[in-house]
Image 1 (cartoon, helix red, strand yellow):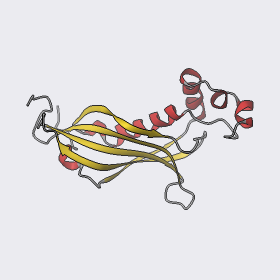
Image 2: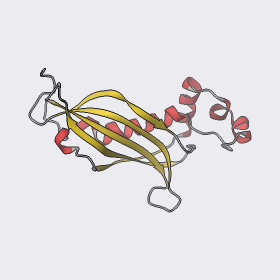
Image 3: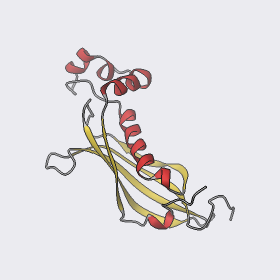
Length: 161
C-alpha cells in the first residue's frame, strides 16, 4: 500500500480545494429519481413543466451524490480519510437540471487533532456545487457541512490512543 498524498496536516482551516466538475446526465438523473425520489417534478415531464421548477429537475439527494463523487475523485481517493461521523447541514438552494455544468469545491472551516485519538484529525468541511461558477450568474445548487476524519502523516490511522 502506498502512502496517501493528503493527510490531516494538508487540510488547514481556510484551505479551498477545487474538486472538478460534472455535467448532469439526464438518463442517470431520471434513473436515480425514479428509484429514490419519485416525486412528479423529478420523474414526469408534464408535471415538472407545471411545477414551480418549470421542468424536470434532480432530486437533492442525486445532487448531493454528484458532489460526493467529485469529493472522492478529487480528494478522498488519495487521502488518509478515515470516514465521517456526519454533518449538521445539507441544502440544495437552487434546482439542478439535465445538462447543467456544475463545479465542485471544498472549504476547510476548522481542523483539530482528536483529543481521544491523537493519530486522527477532525476536519470541518463545507462542500458546494455551483452552476455557472466564475460568472456573475453563478448559483450554488448544493451545500453540505460535515466532519471528515483524516489520519495524521506517519500514522496508519488505526492505532488506538
